[in-house]
Image (tube, rainbow, N blue to C red; front, side, top):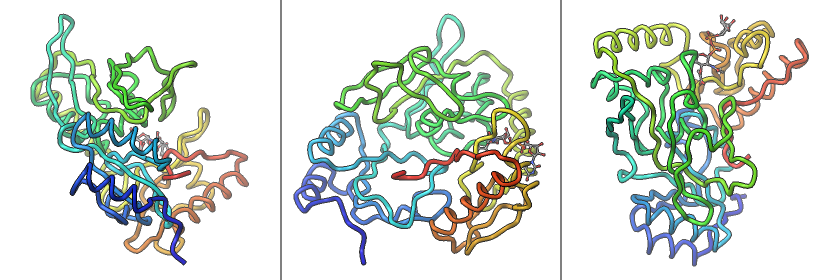
Length: 315
Ligand code: EPU
């Protein structure tokens, strides 16, 4: 039985008329995520500029069409049912990166669709420090901000000055770092704020640095990461948040005996136990089933409920 689709023939005609080749129907989302699993979106729409984005948000709201945004797909698990509605991504008009001088130093101003590694490299090449916290994080600038991404060197919330976003009514706003509530791998609007549907640009603080020294430091960080994480395999990065206190999620999973365990094509990485990898033929259900087993075992052993860091589309 095919899953229920949300898009009516009328809505499909509107998407085609407004977005042309930027609207694709029954698009397999496995092609757009680093885990390479999951079913189709009814439609995958690329918004090339701010006007298109605003029309997409208001048009979907008017038609009661579920709308979800996709960044680089590097921190996302798509279930096998796919997504009954529109999945949107930002196109080339949102991928520019520039460095603006300020009296205090500079700001790296990047479109949300720009790859985060490119933003990191740009700052480093030009001799600006401030983006090292993001070394080795894949995905887009927008995805990184939306998930308050980070490493041991720091998080987005430490480095960001402000971001532009489009609200539920299609309006664009700029929010300063102090105007939102940041937490571990997430951010939320302050009480009474309408919030945002999607982040479109972000600006990060930079300080003068030495390009060679920055390059060396980034190289060391990447080498360390390559040694301790299964970077050549398909994954969504660390799957669970580290508990606030006590051992890291990877340590708990290893101690619970789950390192290297498999379910269908999914496997708890034998390099780093907080990575769930797709061995090549995994389904979304294999991944979901394996994470349920991991959570269950860790809870039974240690009484700790691991919380997913990876977003599950539609959940
Ligand atoms: N550990 C184990 N077994 C494992 C893996 C780890 O015992 O299989 C132990 C390690 O020995 C260490 C502890 O767990 O004592 C922490 O491990 P690690 O140093 O690898 O760091 P992490 O907390 O697992 C965090 C971020 C990573 C980030 C690294 C490096 C989270 C959930 N993870 O990993 O972020 O790359 O630090 O900065 O915050 C991601 O967000 O996708 C991600 C991979």
